[in-house]
Image 1 (cartoon, rainbow, N blue to C red):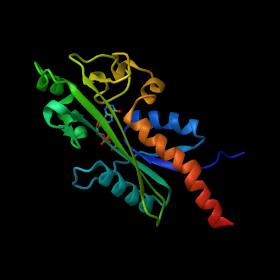
Image 2: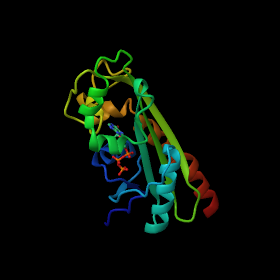
Image 3: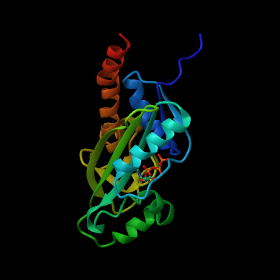
Length: 200
Ligand code: ITT
């Protein structure tokens, strides 16, 4: 028998994000495919707006159900920097650059935010958000995850950085799992009931 087509395609070039989201999708019984293209980013400081625009655009271009995510790392002492510029800052300054900016800084509070947007062709987009607070470590630790994971110690993570955790441990706490969790719950309950009612 041929495998069923994925119900939803995650538009992302980031393999780490896809790995985390697919693990959650499986828990909800959702088959999550991947569109490995860069998302079309508008000039905005609003993660929600960026994710929704990208999902709408890709759903219409590829003619399938698309989920897109925009995330950012916000450091209190740096007035929220790098925030919406996290991707660029990771590629240029990197983890070492953030640690340098934080040298001698006492307030090490930081948080991750994620906006997950879902769109079906010719439909409105829906958005789901999640966040996690924690602190910036003094040194990079761990080899798991991606991006700023080696320098972020989430609250409730027993002092470990995200990079020192397995995918499931990170998923128990992360901004991404909170946003995707809300999305998958909506998709498998509210959304599926609406579809059934329309079909009847
Ligand atoms: P796509 O747009 O293709 O999905 P991206 O890596 O560019 O991939 P974002 O713009 O959403 O994704 O994320 C911006 C950056 O924020 C990302 O490149 C990482 O450096 C950082 N980031 C986001 N979520 C993270 C996480 O869970 N752990 C560590 N760093 C993260």
